[in-house]
Length: 235
Length: 72
Image (cartoon, rainbow over all chains, first blue to last red; front, side, top):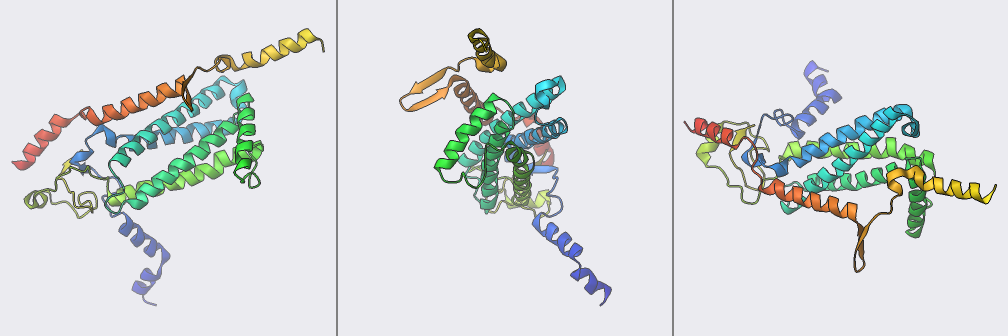
């Protein structure tokens, strides 16, 4: 086998080429964005991401002390409050991001999978938050778990998992569901970088001369697949 | 256990919640009911959404000057 054949049959080369095809170089961390991105409504996606990082960081700190740490320690209480409020902001930003993208019909231009991964991540986040309520180890979590048990039994899924089982719900909350949401968020961001942010309905396609002037590489960011293609400006 | 001790223990349960032990104020519109706190948060989110649509993004002047420079 020649060295060239060996290179093409290597899984590392295949993976490298696949990544290049999925999100071409220059689109991962771009320094230019379409002009229409200069709007506050485009900020809420990355604000959601920032809040999510705070949720993960405060959750990691809480994992060190355990589920009941915050009852007995001021430091634990601080991280518990940080976990709660970053989650609140995560949902506020995510819902406003959802409203903005819904009214923008963000599934346009072959962005259906971007929309779907975002919607499923939203549902997964709700499930993760619910199991967080169950992990508080207080009267609230007792009350919520018994109410949830009745609700889940009434729809016939009570045999699959037990919301009264603190160990199970805590592991779901800190391992299983964050993994699901994390993978969906990563896929969502990859798809956003691949297809570019969705343009507004009234975005005007640029003059051919303007495109020639910019001399940008052929990326999805500068060429939304639904035809709208405003001139880019540096950020 | 005496009745007085039992009553004091029962009274201690809501006090353990602190602020959370206060009764939530609920709004009612027919079959719809929502706590005032949740209603205020939703209103604030709608306000934030509208502001995000109408408020100008900072740095607009800088962009225009850059565009002019590009045109030159």
